[in-house]
Image (cartoon, rainbow, N blue to C red):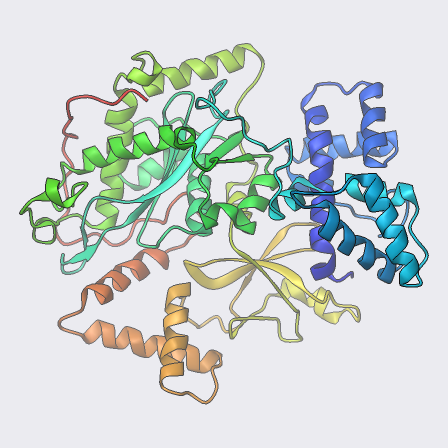
Length: 551
C-alpha cells in the first residue's frame, strides 16, 4: 500500500477540484455529452471517466470521497516529474504565485525555467506548469491566505436564503445560567451551547450543550444534531413535541474562530458538499441572525433560577450560585421544550410574522412541488466521524498506539500481515470517549471502529487523559506508559469519590465525566441521558417575554 501520509493531501485536493466541476453535473437528471466533454478537458480526464465519476458521486449522495483517485500516481492528468523537479516547481509556485501579490503565469514559467537550469535540472514544459496552476484547489488558496473567487464573500446586506437548509448559521456562547452537580446539587459553573439556525425559516436546526469550551468536536456534534432525526432525541428526553427540522445544509455561515478553520471542520464540510462561508471581518451583519437568536434564547434563560443575566448591572444583588437548581441534563431538556413548544410556534417579525415552524413546512412544500427535497446523509454516525479531530499514526505489530494507549481489532490483521504495511493511517477519535478510535481504510474509504487492546480499561475522556499525564509529570514519573496512565486516572477518580468537600472545578469535572463517558456515537446528536438528579426539575410552561426582535 502507498504511504497515506504522503498521498492523502494531494488526493484530497484533487478530489475537491473534481467536485467543483462534477457536483453540479451530478445534480442534473441528465448530463449532456458537451458538458461532460468540457469537464473532461478541464480535469484532464476522458469523457468516459467523467460519466463514471458522476455515477459514483450520485451513488454516494455527493460525498467527496467518491471522487478520490484509486489509480496509480502516473498516467494522464497525473504528476510524473522526478522528485527534485517536482519539489522545485512546488516551491516556486508557493513563493511566487500563491500569494497576494502573485506574478503572472507567464512570468512563473520563465522563473521555473531559469531556476531549473541553475540547479542543473531539466525544466518542466510550459503545459505542465500551467496544469499545476489549474490544480491548485480552493483549500490551497484559502490556507495560503488568498480567497478564491468561488469563496470570496459579497459585501453588503445579509445574504438571503432561497429555501429551508439553503443556509445555516452556527455560533457558540456561554449560557447565562449556573448549573448544578447532579449528585449534591452544588453549583459548578456555566455550560456552553453551540446553536445552528436555518436562515430561511429561523427554525433552530440543532444545538449541542456541553461543559467543554468550543472546539471542532462541539461544532461536529452540533452538525450531527442538525442532520439527525430528532424523534428519538425527543423521546429520550421525555419531550412530546414536533421538531421536523432535519437535513444537510447547502452552506453554513460561521465566524473566524479557530474551530471553524480546523481541518476536521473543513474536510467534513467538503466531504458532504457543504459550502463554508466565513464572516468577513468588519461585517457583523453577516452573523446577525444567529447572534440575535442567541440573544432570544438567553432572554428565555434569564427567567430560570440561577441565571447570571447579561451583565453585572442587570444581575444586581441576585446570587446566581445560591439560586442555581438545574443540572446540565435538565437544562438540555428545558431548552428542547423552549425550542419546540415556544420559540418555533411564536410569530416572528423577521419573517413577516409567520411562525418559524410554519415557514419551514411551507418551504418544504415548495421544494416538493419543484421536485426537490432536503438531502439527508445516509449514515448520521459516519457524518459525525467525518467532523472529529484527525491524526496520523503508524500501524505496529500489536495495533495502533495513540497518546500512550494501544488500540487493536481483528480488522487490522490483514494489514499487519502484509509485508508492505501502510506507513501511516488516518485516525479520528471522539475526545469525549477515548475507548475507541476510527481508522480510515485507505482502499474502501470506510472507517473501522478499533477499541482498546486491553478491553478491561475504563472509558476515559481526553481531558482526563491530559490531567493524568500532568499528574505523572508533576510526580516526576520515570516513564509514562499505558499502565501508569490508567493507574493515575484510577487514583484521581478515587480521590474525587471520597472527597467530602469538592472544589467547584472537581464537581464540574465529575459532571463532565458523567456526561462524556456515555455511548457517544449510537445517538450522535448529543450525549445520552445521564442518571437522574436527586430532585427532578419540572420545567412547566416557558415564561414568555414581551416580544421577539425583528431578525
